[in-house]
Length: 417
Image (cartoon, rainbow, N blue to C red; front, side, top):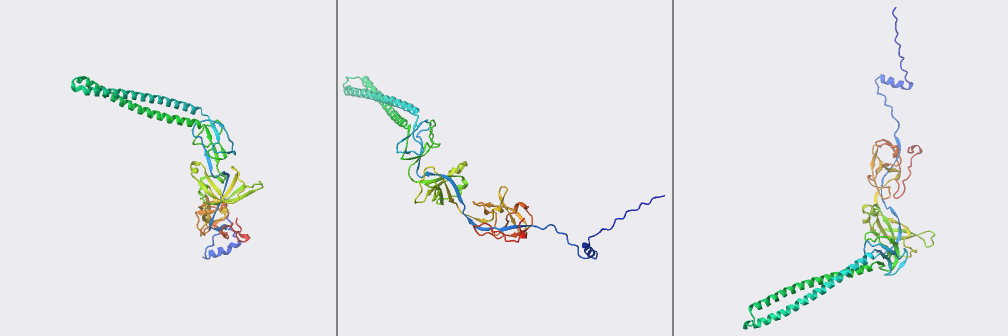
C-alpha cells in the first residue's frame, strides 16, 4: 500500500492593516507606493564669512640696553686673557685698562723684529762704507787717467799704459754702480725692518685692552684663560651714553610682521617695585638678517620723549608692538580644524559640506586665503561630519566686525548636534 505524502500548505501572508489600502490600489493599477525615507539630515549651525581688517599685536620679551653701545674686542687674535680688571655694571673712564692679555708671544715677536732691524742697520752702514770706498778709488783713478791723457801726445806715456788706466777706471765705475744698488737694497731693508719693529713694539703695548670712551660695562664676556677672537663674542659691551632702549630677539616669522616706526608699549618695573609702568615707544631698528640659517634677529624699540622711570641696563622688560594689518574673512575659531594645515567645511548650494584648506592671518582666526566673502562654513560640528555629507544648515547671525561670533537665534528644537 503506497503511502501518500501531503505537501504542507504555506499560510497566506498577513499584511498590516495600514498597508491594505495601498495593496488594493496597486492591484487596481494605481500609482506605485512611495519608497520609505531614511533618517533626517543632521541639523548643523553654519555661519557666513565676513570681510574684516585685523591688527595682531606682537608680544616680545627682552631687556633694557644702551642705545649707543661700544663692542670691545682685543686688537689681536689668539692671545690668552690673563686678568679681567672690571666687572659688569662698573663705570669706567676713557682709556682705563679693562683686560690684561698674555703678551709673551708679542714680546718675543718684538725682540725678533728689533734684532732684524739691527742687522739691517748694520748692513746699511756697510753698504754706505763700501760705496764711499769705491767712489774714492774711482776719483783717484780718474785723476790719474786724466794726467796720462795730457802727456800721451808727447810720447812720455805709452798707449798701452794709458789704455790700462782707462780700463781700470771703467771697472771702478761698474763697481760703483753695484755698490749703489747694494746701498739702495740695504736702505729698503732697513726701512722695512724699522716698520716691523715699530709695529711689534705697538703690538706688545696692546696687551692692555682699554676703554675707548667713558661709560658703563653693560656686558662682560671676558674670562681669564680664554683666547681672544675677532669673530666671536666681544670681551665687553660698553654703554657709552645715558639713552636706553628695549631690545628683543626675533625669529624670521616675527621679523616679517614688524616695520620701522611701528608704535609699541614697553612694560618696565616701576621705581617702587610695586608694579609695572607702561611707556610708549616706536620700532627704531630691525635686524632681520640674523634670522638666516636658523639664527635669530634683533629689534630695537626707542622710548618716546618724556619722563621715564629709572631704567637699569639689563633690566627685564616686555613690549607689545602693533604689527602689519591683514585683510581677510572673520570666522569663529571653532570652525577651523587642523590636519596639520587649517581647513574648514564649506556648505554648497545643495547643503553638502565640502572640506576646504584655508590660510590664516597673524591672529589665527582671520582667513586670508581659501574662502570668499559670503561663503557659509560649519560653525563648530566639523568633528561629527564627513566630507560630502548632506546637512540641514541652521544659519547663524554673522558677528559684527571685531567681535565674537553671535549666537544663533534658532529654536531650542534646532540645536546643533
